Length: 165
Image (cartoon, rainbow, N blue to C red; front, side, top):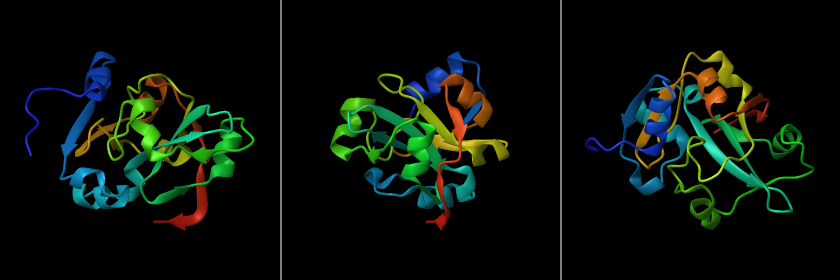
């Protein structure tokens, strides 16, 4: 699959911030692949491929969580990190209007507006991580510390213990 010379917002933002990155294209199956399948298709361990999840509190205030492909977000840990009493996953129908990204192509970089963003602490142990490049079928690999400074994000323990996909 060839994208041509047109860059996504994610790529433009990383380039403008002078943050090195590598792009990877894959058959996104219209957003129907889960992050673990994407990791396998790219030849990366699931611990280095991260997915972006958007939540909301009871007042519909949003927060973004970036976790490994093989992990499950612990909503209690996420709520603690975000200083909220309770969080729920954002309904998929609200993802595009809120973030500008479709399911399967959601990136913490370049959303329509900034939301409090949290990256799982495991990213700090990786030299680079892969995350959505802002469209289905595109991933970018970059330094997690540079990513956290760019968006900005806080590293937190976010995943359910002992639970992998």
